[in-house]
Length: 369
Image (tube, rainbow, N blue to C red):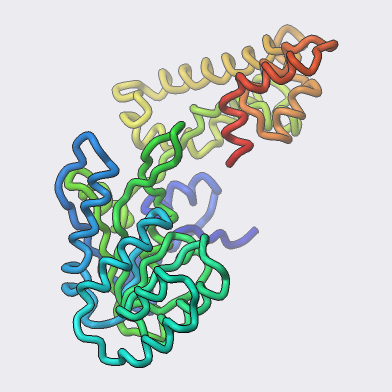
């Protein structure tokens, strides 16, 4: 392997290069973008106790932001639910002003039997989400590409597939409802950057603008993120048992010494020395850090042994994977859940199997994802 490409927003590329023993690392910043992109992060008050009401209240700021940044050019507004796209598109028709081609918009609206979409199209706006029939989505996409509608409200699925030219992209809110079990969660960086990237498409515009609508407390965080300054850290310690088991299952690690050498070759090992505070090791010497990591590594191997997932031989120095190790690795079963599976009696009946599975909250969530 000679060339590895990473995201241009990754600031600590030299850490990645060091981890991979690469001789050189090249960084291409936003100045290399074919169409320059200007980003604005707007903090609009504080969330308080009700995230839903805060998100709903963001809609009243959208018309002003469109007028301020669109320059009369096509605008895509990303919402986080299908319902939000429809409601916002309907609201924007009330502020769309004089329509230059009302006759064409009336003709366009006649091509759909979706009443809510008809009303929006007549007002020069539209919505787009995965719940719409294919013909209606294609109708909206063509109308936006042809410039008949200037304002399109869409879910993030539009950012992943359809390539539509827009001068302005507005991201309405940075928290997404992930269900009763998870509640509201911050939008992930990849999705955010994908949506922002829809602004200023090559061949259609000479510049693009992205506006992120968030709360005042999160404003600084998203400014840092969009400037590509969010350093990538390791999450290895959180899944050290599972990761070590994978290496043992594939016989990359067959003894304790190899396990210790392996952890010293990880990205985590490099980052912990550069940012000890992030990993709770500020003030620790290199020897103390090595001792801590060796202990964590040995504890993880001992946990696997006690759970009868691996076997320790030759006085605990040799590590041999059992069938459970291969199953855990191949199917990415979390350690806690694998312990429950291994502990099942050989003659377990359907009721006991179902009860065990019902208790495996982590495994069920992973399967659903």
